Length: 274
Image (cartoon, rainbow, N blue to C red; front, side, top):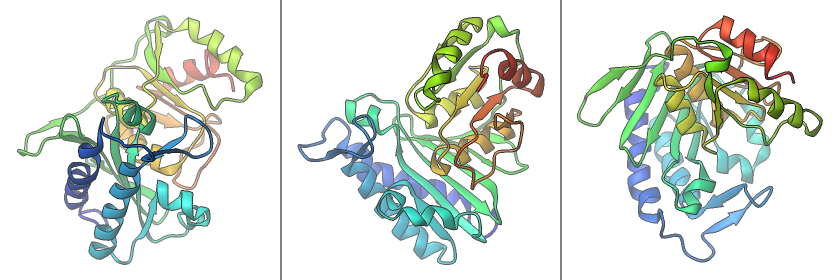
């Protein structure tokens, strides 16, 4: 148990919401079930809203003292976001991460939740509805792939490699316009660059040891708190671009994650020159 939130109960809640509200709508969204928010590629679907509604209702019943911070709740009431820094206990949820993929019928999306206690991320969960398993971590307890039958496998990040052998993922769409071309050019120095348009699946891939770096510029807590903690518990080094630790209330400053500090420094110096 972390603080007063039992993460196994929270993990099961994400799974139940996915089975009740998300999977039945996958490739079955009707007219009017998908809407744009800030831009054409920033989408919300009926699955996002109904899954968050279910998770929120149950979370508030189970943990009434916790601040509930969901992506869609904040979209409707933006000031909620600024309560996270001062909350004694908070549950942060992304009901469907990778909504663009979900709405496009691409099976690369996930359900994420984190637990924040006194300004520190203490637990993170990423549930994959298609694979029916979780990647999860509690601070100090390692990162684990867990399945509903009780099977568990400890996760570890990839071994460090030279820059020209690194394979990884970078979200370049939110980089400053004046820097984007420079960084895209710098990425020719690595072996391979990809992007799933789904932080949930990118963090799972990284924590499982399959890629060597992740980079994000836009920081919203529901997108990155769970995955950063899971990555760190799997052995990674994570920091904002200025080298400072990433904390739950941070909304800018970028985020770079690598297998170790030496790899982080090389990537920051040679590639991500923001």
